[in-house]
Length: 123
Image 1 (cartoon, helix red, strand yellow):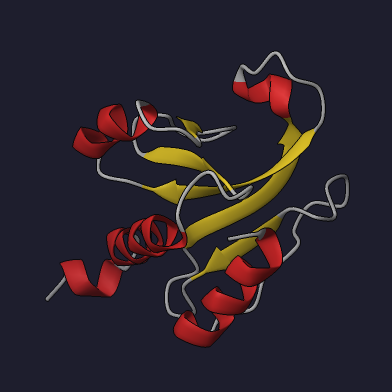
Image 2 (cartoon, rainbow, N blue to C red):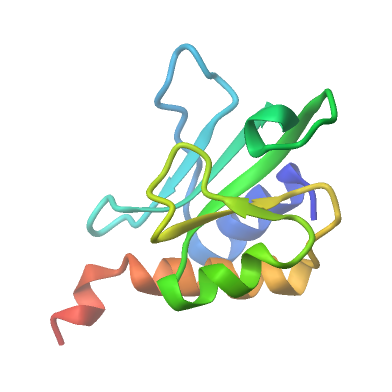
């Protein structure tokens, strides 16, 4: 799944448009719950070196809120990294270069959406 496919999927499934809150990073897209404005996904393009790679170049990633017990297992898989610029105990970065399956990204996106939906915790 690439960046555009993910954005289209989020719009179709979660009825949410991307927001671009940073003037210095105009391609960084934030997706929020309409009810509580909490983020459930952030799509960015960053240097591979910022993820610990020795490769040059830019990569698209998505940050997703994740159960802390799951993060250790995910970090052992290709295409997953400690969350870039987020709390590494509760968020993970997944590459959008095809190394993570579409199904895996969709599953983690659903979990992130649920984890950030405050209304469900209050019921």
